[in-house]
Image 1 (tube, rainbow, N blue to C red):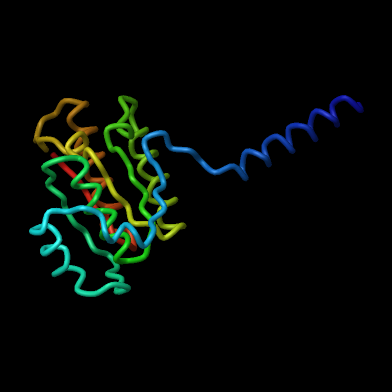
Image 2: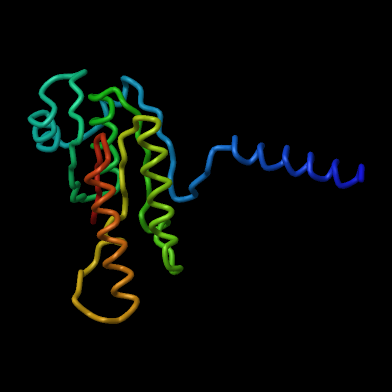
Length: 171
């Protein structure tokens, strides 16, 4: 009787420890923004466009959605850092290619975790490699295409419901 009781206590402590751990998402990383990020190197025409969207520092634009069509990955990320410094928020950079799974429902589960974590921390969401998720939305009946369309619809729904800035970068 005593052994069973000890095993139950051990499993209780073990599972309570799991509940307290923060979920790690391998395709995502947290980026702490500093005031120096407002000085990142950006081409002048990009800074001018962003300055029209963010006319002054410390002015937070909630629910802002920007699509960054990048010339280079570095330029796109620098634009994201500049925006984050302007809004005085940190970035949660997510590689969408790393979230997409071949298993049904797994991509949606990964996206749910990303959006929940970012909203809880009040981070700017920066989705990189979005062209891996978005493709040609088709009207086919194959299970693979139906699942892809369902995933895209789920992503757009979460994007619309997110209370914060979202940057989506495509090549």
